[in-house]
Figure: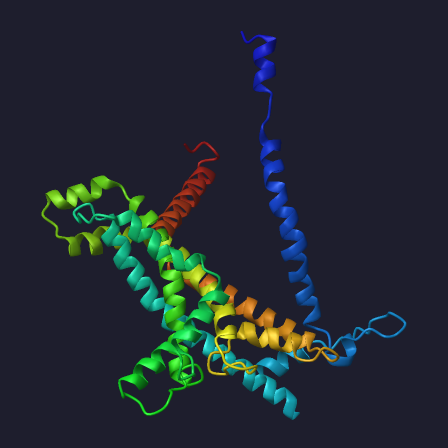
Length: 350
C-alpha cells in the first residue's frame, strides 16, 4: 500500500511549468502579431486618405467602405485610380510568382543534391563540416549587406565589377543596365535568393535524411542497389514530410519577399520588374504621409494572407497520405458494420 509521502509525490503536477515557459511566446505573439493581424483585417474595410487623418480635435474619422478596397485591387473600378491600383497589384503579384518559382526550383534541386551527397556514407570527402558551415553562412548575412554587395558586383555603373570586366575585355562598348533591365534584374534577384537560402534548405533536408532508418540503406546495399536506385526508391519517398515543410515555408517566404527586391535598385525609384506584393503594401502605406492609403495596404495584406492559406491547404491536400486515408475509411466502415450487426442482435454483438 502506498504511503502518504508516495501519494503526495504522485500528485505533484509539472504541467504549470510548461505553461510558464511558453507564456512569453504567446504574450509576444498576441501583442506584436495577433493584434496587428486583427487590426489589418479591420482596416481593410475602411477608407483611405482623408478618412484616416486625425482632426485637430484629436478624433479619427472611420469611413467604412465595405469591400470597395478589395474590389479596387482585385477587379478594378470605374475611376482611373482604381484601375491603376488593380493593374499595379497584379503586376507586382506576377513578379512575386516569377521570382519565387525561379529561385525555389533550382534551390530545392541544389539543396537536395548536396544533402544526399553530404549524408552518403560512401562519399569519403574531407572537410564536410567546413563546407556545410560555408554554405549556410549566406543565410545569416543581413539582406541590406547582400543587396549592397550585388549592387557593387552587377550594378548599372561602369565601375561595377561585372561591367568593369566586360568593358576592359572589350566584350561591350558601354555599361549594361543590369539592375534595371527586366530579365537581368529578375535573374540577379533569383540568384541572390538561391545563394542566401539553399544552405538553410540543405540543412533541413539533411536532418530529414538522417532521420531515415539506416537499416533500409544497409538492406538496399546488400541487395545490390546503386546510389540512384537508393535515392529514388528509399530516400526521396521518405523525405515527403520535410519536403512539404520546405515547400510551405518557401512559399510563405516567397510570397512575402520584400528586402532584396526593395533594396536592389539605383536612385529613389523601385525597379517595377522586381517589385513584389510586399513592396506594393509598403509603398501604399508610406506613399503619402498626409493621405496614406491604409485601406489599400490592409486589403492587399488580407488578399495575400488568403492566397497563402489557399496554396498551403492545396499543398497539404495534394501531399496527403492516401493509404492512411483509405485505411481510416475501411476502419470507419468496419465500425459502422459492427454497430449495425450489434443493433440487429439486440445489443448482444461482440
